[in-house]
Image (tube, rainbow, N blue to C red; front, side):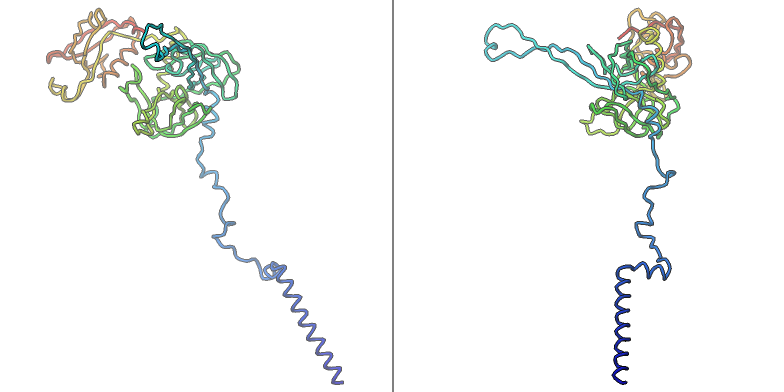
Length: 380
């Protein structure tokens, strides 16, 4: 009997040990069974699962809609011209009579432009197409076409081209006179031949003048990167509206970064309209060569601040016939004081030929007023 009892205890203990071993194996293979029974494990805030994969849409700033609206109307401009150059004489020719030798080569340049109407007119920079024998443009959608020159305006460094393609995307014109320093702008163009590229920045200054880029200047300054090939491309605001035509950068070899210039679209409107209507820009002219007067020079003649002095006059010009003389100070043009020589030229240029302009000045300490009949500005 004792032997039977011992065998029974041995069987029970073996069953318990076997059950524990089986339970341990199940827990090792399926640990979630224990967590499920005990309730969900707490999630730590620092685990990757607690961090959103992408930021909320409201927190993301993007100008993709502006680019989508503006970019199709921006084109790449490629030009070619035949250049003839003299070949240096060989060593043997240096010691005897020889005829000069010449060779020809193809010079290629690149730039950008903006389609401004459905008829195929394109605005670009004059320096992009100057002296070009052939001009070809490429649209963002890949189409290409030869372009002809409708007209040029070296005074503002603008030119108008024409292509024969349909249908065409057209730029939406904005208001450059409403730009403020700090407004976001995008530069779209063909920098370094990389096809269409978009850069981003802000308006750094407005109405920049006397930079020596063009005779008539009123530039928008921006830190949106403008590189070789961007000339003639679009400067657009954050809604995608055209506010300027990218024109120039300050020489980077001087270590200057982030200073680019664009022609304001309000100036582009006038040039574009005249070129399409007349093939050229019609501007007022009275034949003066104005210069800025420094504050020190102004105080010597009794003025509180700098102004504009008539440095010279064209012989037989409207200004000379009206009685203006070199050395006269210009105090006002049609009742408005010019801020500088460039501003004075711009105000006169905006008058229609045949109209009369009122000039108020200072000569030998005495004020005077005279009327000059505006002529047409000679073509450059």
